[in-house]
Amino acid sequence: MLEKTKDIWNKKEKFTEILRNLPPEKLLEWITTAAIWARATDIHLEPRENEFVIRYRIDGLLETAAEMPKDYFLPIVADLKILSGMKTEIHKKIQEGRFNIQLEGETENRDTRVSIIPGGYGENIDIRLLAKGIEKLKMETLGFIPKDMETIDREIAKPNGIILVTGPTSAGKTTTLYAMLNSVNKPGVKILTAEDPIEYRLPGIIQTQINEEEGYTFASALRSFLRQNPNIMLIGEIRDKETADIAIRASLTGHLVFSTLHTNSAVESIQRLLNIGITAQDIASSLNIAIAQRLIRRLCPECREEYAPTTEELKYIQENLPQNDQKILKSPKLYKPKGCPKCSPTGFKGQIGIFEILINDSEIQNLISKNIPVQQIDIELKKKNMVTMTQDGIKKALAGITTLNEVRRVTE
Image (cartoon, rainbow, N blue to C red; front, side, top):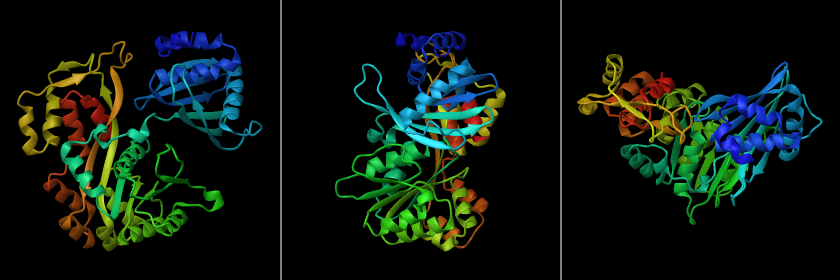
């Protein structure tokens, strides 16, 4: 019977009807199974005044899967709390937990991360469905162009320095970090991580989880790591001056440090570190590269439709591509979604990254150390032919990987 949800999860009325006819103890199973078949990364259960809404985040965008009567909500919440190891009697506090799913016919468990926060009409729930096979993830699958792959391979092979991955929430930063860790994870290398939370388990790597209530912060984790004699350290996020200072000290004493920042572009990572109190000289001497990224939806290769760019689209492409790339515009083609049984009605299937990489070579290092404004550094980077996220996205649109609208949605 569960097999039917493969076809109807995206037909809201039909899916709602099926869920309403299920016994309460089966609701959570159906909701999570349908989400996995829909390729969702998150399940949102959102109570309202007289109903609750089930929404799936698919390829980065939220879609409503069903709207249910409110009295179906409490049994789901109770089952979820028990599965996730939460306290069932607590309703007014934030709770977090995890549980495993194993679909029929599969041999491996799928991990989930559950977050519950109190709201005006009840507890709001997010179930993050963690991807399988993360321990086998390779950099080549993320969408980096060959030139950027060469840069990353060179920089992560260095014995010391800081490698930053920047972008907003849900930009794929953790996935990129884990792919880089997979590349450097070798028997002769000791790797320690401090994460908040640990999303995926990586064999051969010592992973720790931040617990600020117990005093285990990113800064205290870094201090402890330095006494463990690691080769490589990952810090989930540089949030303050103390963490940044220790990360820089570690990078200058023979350690390779990976971390993230919340900035919109690669060059803004310099300004962010300056803003939290790091000196320009320390940034210049410790930073190896800063990778900025976004996730865009992939077009379904089975049903995408080719078309000639409009005048406005062509103008946008010409204004954003550097002169040495204009040759690809001799007979440009773009693509748009259609929708088919293999991708659902949207015409998209999966996501891919668009990237830009700030390489802190001797020239950029000199500019940073002299406290040159980041706007001027950005101009110099473009003179050195740094591929921006917009340019990377345009090239992927021209190659039929995504649409120009997708590129503009995440970069403008």
